[in-house]
Length: 289
Image 1 (tube, rainbow, N blue to C red):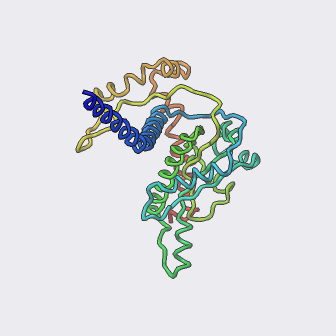
Image 2 (cartoon, rainbow, N blue to C red):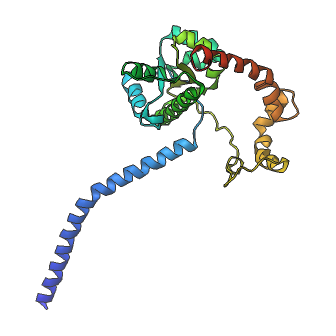
């Protein structure tokens, strides 16, 4: 009887020792998994809760942090591994004031700690080729498209990384509206073209999320399915019924939300005039004959 109890105690003891050893080995991996899982969820939440930040706290962004984010963003996809982009960092208040008119004097251009202008850049690759007994042929529209795609991918990757660090930003689509003013202010040479700008800083506001169309509005299976009136009604019903958008229509004295965009925000006249300016800038920068 005593011998049986002794064996039971031995089994309990050895099981305890084995459990401790097993846990000591596994715990670090479990801890790492938990950290990774938490971070993964955090990243997904940042994407789901993305919003434009136009007001920033009176707090600088360190050179170390900014350079770290810019360096990490270099891992983004790129055509031929050529990295056909460059970015101009603007911190100086006087330089931000010079850039502001090209962005319709939106206040965040001058109030943000940092303004980043992302450029389609085939100049660096061209100079590299010229200095290596190679003959470049990148002064054409296709090369601009390739470089612009690279630059925009880099921009989005940077934005994702910046948001993970708690920074806020506002993407300025105005960059391609009056590019020549930006080109002259930043002294951009030929084969360098501005395609995107963001204002960057520590958020001092928490605006509501902007509305988005349902997934079925943007996804097409196998082949493109054109938009019938019925489908348009389905896609835009929720957007048009939002109180903020209904107020938007009323304030602007229009019948529909679509009219606000076509008659006030993005008019045919403005689009044609700015298209002409964009094409002229592309010619000056050497991407068009």
